[in-house]
Length: 143
Image 1: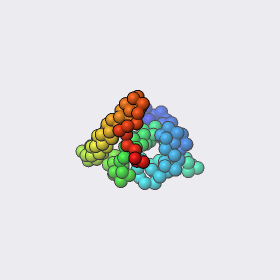
Image 2: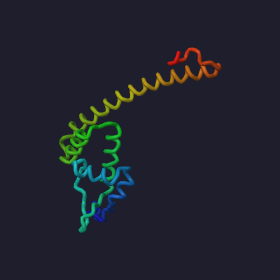
Image 3: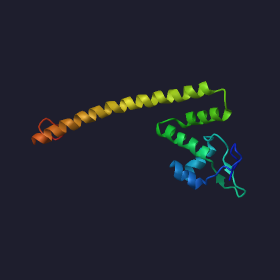
Image 4: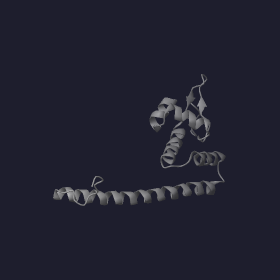
């Protein structure tokens, strides 16, 4: 166990393997996140030096996973973690960082939707030609 809740009950702790399983991150990635300062709080250790995580750590890591999957640079994620660690008073800075990332994600989504539209059009062209039993009008690099 690591710590107590506000009611005085022990806070259950998780091993690095359990956290890896819950977050989809490898054990090596979890160590990297800790080393790079991407976690909000210090990772607790047992008397034997083994890492012990809380449910709060898991929740934070799940947010980090989504931010990284959506393309947030490590430097921005590190800055976001630093802001959160500092505590209240920098919420506007956090909002600016997250909003800038959201705008980048929105632009990526728009670009992907444009690509999808072209692909859907091309699928339709091929489907139409194949339904007619002819390949006339389709690009033929050997022609």
